[in-house]
Image (cartoon, rainbow, N blue to C red; front, side, top):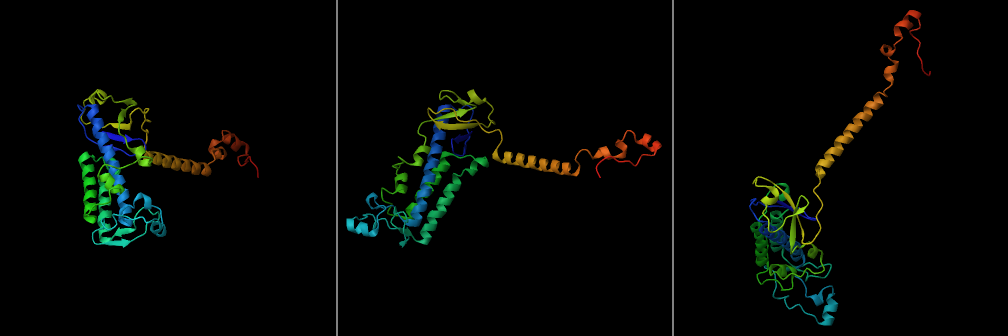
Length: 286
């Protein structure tokens, strides 16, 4: 089963045709939402590696002078210190402390981010690699482990990375909230797969069958059908048509289609003209 959600790439998964749609939907949703969590954590960890942990909400966006004037303090500043000390790297938007991990510790975070992204990459679909819930969970666990290495005293509870790890993330009002699907529906061949049915009720009992199903939010209308040709196939066809057009153009330039009228063999009166001695007469402008 290759699952696709509106506006995102797919996920390959293996299920028997005797699988009921209800449990299939639950598995697909779990993989889909956990994969989104991994990608959100990766994005926030990149900021963590560059500019340190998040400032308290009342200090974000303020200058140092304003913070001193208002007598605000970051109570986690001396607690959440990265392993090996920190280096100054000011956050241009003022969300984070500017006390980033040193180069070695930042490399630990960045390498783990790269590995985690590869584990849940969209490229897996193109290579027909199956993505399981265990693989996605492993990617998340690796991210947790890297943060624990760099920040052994943990991050502030309000830091987005820590909130994701504690399953307390607040996505309200963000683009990420629109991507999460809490209750979903699966569609195939323009039909919604009903939870009480088996997969075999729709696709038959051939275990080697590959189907592409669409994942949408529950209550949404039917998604658009798959394109007959991929983008790569379209490009190849357009290139072929262009080459064909150029070939025809060159042939037309070389022969306008009327040249054979001037050939001796095309003249039905050629023999008669020879007898009358007018074989060398040509018609046409000088």
